[in-house]
Length: 233
Image (cartoon, rainbow, N blue to C red):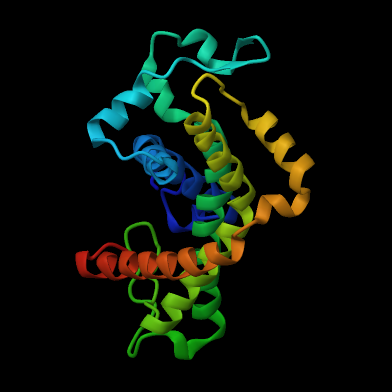
């Protein structure tokens, strides 16, 4: 990310964390409505045409909490598109540790393998020649070590962000149960804690590992291989 890390010497742990977080927040802003529709469809008991289902969400009234219009709905009554962003703030809060920890852990694991475990490098790999900034190209890892680095990054990010994921899904489903009620992030988290305790924020985490760990491992490996094919270092 040139703005934060114009040269290799600028790639500090904190800047890697910020860069990953910003990338994740940008991505989730454009894809969040699709995720909400997917979750709502999973809880829909009556089959209906897709466009009719989307229209139903769009026409839901702004939720009421405690006798007043809840949160940011107060100043967006005319923008029904906000109905597709129920739980969005919680997702953004959760995306910071998720994407940030993911990119940070992946880079740390890669550097550890390059510096401490030489056999994880591809054959005939070296630091190469410095570019105009004095930075050396990084040796590529073998496929299996690359997958392991990505898998560890996925597990770490999932652990860091999972409580926010649970709260987000609770907020999304609330619209399917009662479209007249919009429960905020704090109220949802409080209710979850009172009913299930701290363990309630980690229900289903083991299944999450089974999904996210191989997904992130494959994602980072494909990312690194495509960078190599395109000559991006």
